[in-house]
Amino acid sequence: MHRNDYYRFCLIVWVFSHSLMNASCGQQKSKKHMSYLNLTPPGTEAEIFAPGIVTYSSFNHVCPTLSPDCKEIYWPSKDRKDILVSKLKNDKWSDPEVFSVLKGFKADCPVISPDGNKMLFNSSHPIDENDRDPSEKIWLIERTGNGWSTPRPLCDEINSDHLHWQASIDLQGNVYFGSERSGSKGKDDIFVSRYIDGRYTHPVSMSESINTEMHESTPFMDPDGKYLIFSRTIKAGRYGQNDLFISFNEEGKGWTKAQNLGSKINTELGEGCPYVSPDGQYLFFLRMSQERSEIYWIRTESIECFRH
Image (cartoon, rainbow, N blue to C red; front, side):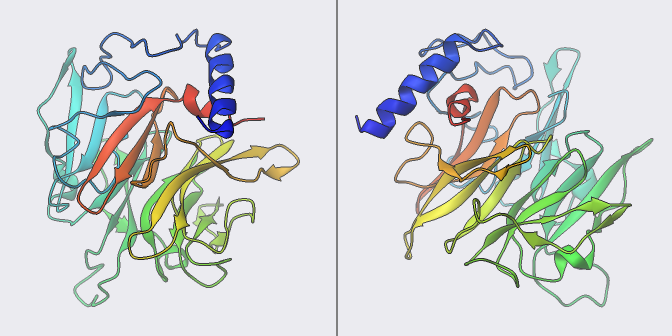
C-alpha cells in the first residue's frame, strides 16, 4: 500500500468511528434500502449500481438522478434517446418506463435540482423549426401543478458556446458545467452561471484551485455550495485517464486545492460523472474504459476524510 493510500485509509477509519450518522465501518453492509430500488447499499467498497436495470451491460453515459425524497429515479435509456423513470409508490417501485415529458427529445444527462422543482438535461433537439444548430445544449423543465412544464433551453449566456457532459445545479439555482470556451484556464474548465434576479449571468471559469491546464468536466456541486466533485484528465492522449477530484468551499477563504479522491474511487480505467444522493449517503460515479462504462456507488464517508 502506498503511503498516501495508507494515510487516507487511516483517516477514513477515524471518520467512520466518529460519524454523526453512526455509520458502521469496515465492509459491513446495510439492509436493503427502500429508497434505492430495494437494493442492498454498498459499504466502503464501490459496487455496480442496479446491474441490468440502471447499469447496462455495455455502455452507460451518466449516473442516475433522484428526487429529494429519493422516491423517483431518472436515467437515460440504453440508446440515449429517452429518459427512463421509476417511482416508489405504496412501498413498491414501478417498472422503468419512458419519461413521457421528454419522449423523443434525445434527452441525456438528467439532473434534478435540490428542491425537486427543476430538471436540467442535455439535448441537441432543435429549439424551433428554423434551428439548424446540431450542438448540444442544456435544457430545463419545471414542476407545475399538473406535472412538468414544456421543455425549454436555458439562456444563450449558457448555451451559446461549447458544453460538455453533465451539469449541476445548487439550491440558489446556480448552474455548473464543463466547457472549453473563452475564459478557460486550459482545456475544458468548470464554469458557473449564477442565477440572480431571475436571470442567469455570464458563465465564468471557477477558481484555479479547481481548474488547470487539463480537462475538467462533469461537476457535481453540493446543494449548499460547500464542496465540488468533478472529473479531471490526469493522463492525456487517445486513451487518457480521468480521475475524480474534490474541492471544499472554506468560508472566507475560497476553494481549497482540489484533491484526488484516491484508490477507493479512482482506478486506471478512469472515472467521471459524480453524483451524491439527496440524503447525502451515497456517491455515484461512472467507471469507464474503451469497452464499457458502468455506474458504481459507495458510501460518502469514503470522501469525508478529505475535508481538512
